[in-house]
Length: 445
Image (cartoon, rainbow, N blue to C red; front, side):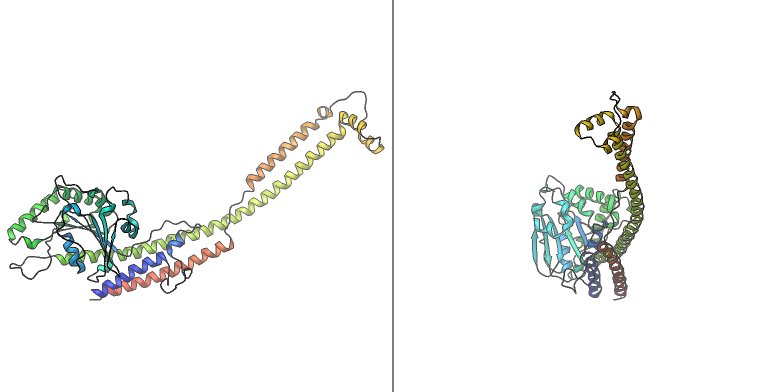
């Protein structure tokens, strides 16, 4: 079991590192030695929406007060990190996780440690009632799982300083497994517990597993059966998948029982192990899908760049043609203007007064006949000049619109995308190796 758990831990950690730092990240101290899948996905050239999978499975335990949630956690990890029997008013949400050093994190430190909890920071009163207990335990598959201990649910006027139902419902969207414990001698049938279970079953039925805890405290068989029937009937009327509902009895192992009582506590461990196995498979599948999406996006960007390159060539040809045409109309406008200057009598009359008599210039100016007239009106030169000038500006605007080129990849960007494709290939090769390691540990006893 330990070897299997260690293999699963390595696989989950490897997938996480591939997203965060890339292949051979642990072997290369240099920050530029490798690049993670997230770095590729978030590149400005690609912008592929991609999320980093967590290194551990998350399991949340809910139930009424005194249902044995904290006691189970202490038993599972083999260390008393959770205090049992504490007054309800002092309880909050506690994340129990494995690490290299025993430590307790409070409030802001917990939110910083689990970045996916960012959406809970706005819940009033929660910051002072959320904790993280880091344990060095290597028991069972604890190294692969984060266990969330939730506050006990009770009826009556007692209220927590935060909306416990809201937080539990929010957490249900982010955990992989929800263990629901019912205490046979406490408030197993409390309305608040049933209301929360009903809400969770609406959207997370596949994550829920139900257990009657502390079964050893009800030694008489008929009393246990009576409680089981009551809880089963109450739940069956509230959940949709009641045909598949089961409620095994569990309790912490003990040797002093006078009457043997069925104990399915190993089923709880198996539920956690199953969640770990499914998460390993899901993360490997997600990694393949993300690699495929990124690779497809790279091909799309490269193909679009080739199309834009050809389109830019066509636009440039049209732009040059329009530019030449514009020059023709500009020269035509200048020519018409020049004709108007030298052919208009009123201009000629003024030139005769401003310049000395030069035979060459006089021959170009029209003869005065005693009547000064605007030849543009008579000959249409002014209209021709205006039409030519307007045509020139229209051509210039058309050239501006037509000769607007698409941005193209630089040589450096082009090479970077091709390098990304090589990285994607190496990611998939590593993934295949992780799958082989996963299949190998399934055959280990």
